[in-house]
Amino acid sequence: MAKRDVIYPADKDRHALYDAHGYSPAVRSGDMLFVSGQVGSRQDGTPEPDFEAQLRRAFDNLANTLKAAGCDFDDIIDVMTFHTDPENQLETVLAVKNEFFPEPPFPTWTALGVTWLAGFDFEIKVVARIPKAA
Image (cartoon, rainbow, N blue to C red; front, side, top):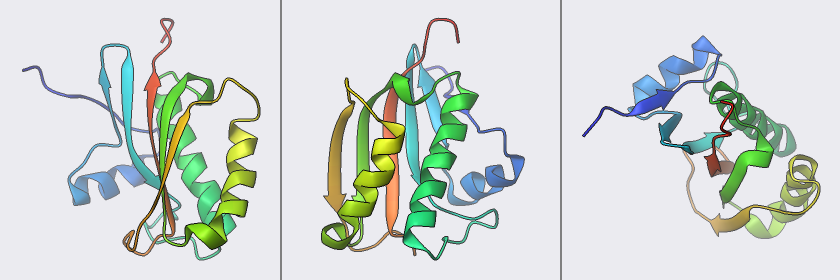
């Protein structure tokens, strides 16, 4: 099997976080991009304390990873999100999510309630198709 074609976002400071935890931010396979769960971490890897700010950082971290592969939010096919308190977070999540996915056709979306995200309250994981030009 060929080695994984790992995609790292441009922010070199975040590379150490991925390496420390033993996973890749994204892996390209053919014209598909599989992005690991992105959280709303600050530069030092700690959670952003405000939920909406944490959510926005997670989407920004996702955008940076997509960009490194020549993708954007229009290329996303499947979204999976993880929530520590879905009932109380959903309104905020939908408001922010709708800024990034403002109109149809929407990607598929699975939202899961979880009890632990290593100190975070939200995580987003996606699969995207890499445009031919990339």
